Length: 471
Image (cartoon, rainbow, N blue to C red; front, side, top):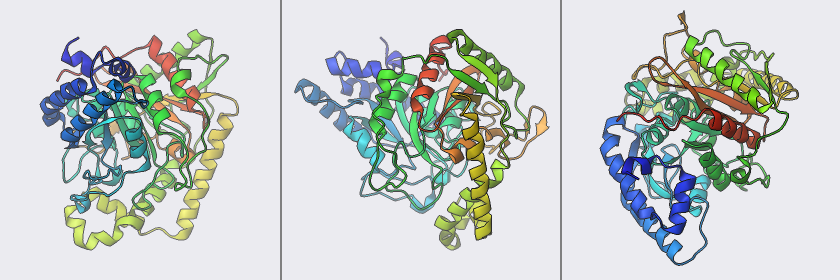
């Protein structure tokens, strides 16, 4: 096995080799660090490497194996953490110059759980300021490039996380998703990304109210089984997060290979409101969804019509940003990302009635999606209406030859942040420009198990991991 093959090894296989010491955690970590030092200057995925800390954690992981100690689910596995997630004694900037020198004195719950599971922390990955946009660029660290095409965006806001995994700079990454921020970059970078049900992975402590009741934590990986393994390590209630869900007593890694019987799948190319989609994306989704019939599952076009989701989502997000950061504008506005400043100022214009109207629209969306899942087990959509577009742009000006609004390309992801359903993206094809195309797999609320099982079944019949970016 050469070094590149090791960097792209599934984490669940890597874990077994560490357990037997066929490969040591330190050996794996050093090889990945060597690759990060070579590749990261090209793509800018990691913003704050923690290599000395990683070596220390890897050495300790190997000692635990040799001493016969109890090992965690992610024992010795190199992992990255998005720079929106609070890490003790490690710089956490939230991608914004206001917090450029911020070093927290505690870990978020999800970081504590990852450490308890035995990870080796490679560092923090790049993100736009406060995750406010779906491409990764900020005033401290700059742009993150797509490993498949360095002139294309990696997506966002977990763009650094996705680019790192796609480039072989670590097998596991944790991202956050307030409107598609796990699924969009995973789609653009040819990866599997899972947004669990809201509350499945707790948030505490959290900075302010931005993306409150919208943001989910989840894994970004190359293999579905690795996502199941990470979810097992991160899930479960926490007393300080009022939205955290009770333990459901499912071991996702153990059940992910099971194939459900008599599954009913719906698909939609517009959710009743999407106006335009790239032709190649549409063709890839239709081809992919048909593959499920070989399992004896029924596939049927969905009748769903979501009303004004952009309006509700925009109101809730910008109001949250305004609440948290409007007080910083007098001192910091000229140093902050201009688009973020515009969103904060827009958020100050809403009345209480506007917020209640947004909540009513959100309620109606939930009822529409709930009605669909009374008939179907899974909903399939494109992950995005386009594949990765030009680096430096915030959005494509046209989709399918039609002029498009700034959020039109990401219309398939954010509705399911509003409804709290679990949703994953999985590669399902390649564009004529050799960039990945992603399919979104949405499940009933609380039903990550079926989402993972359907994802694993598709991975088996349409694997993609033999393709690697040429870096």
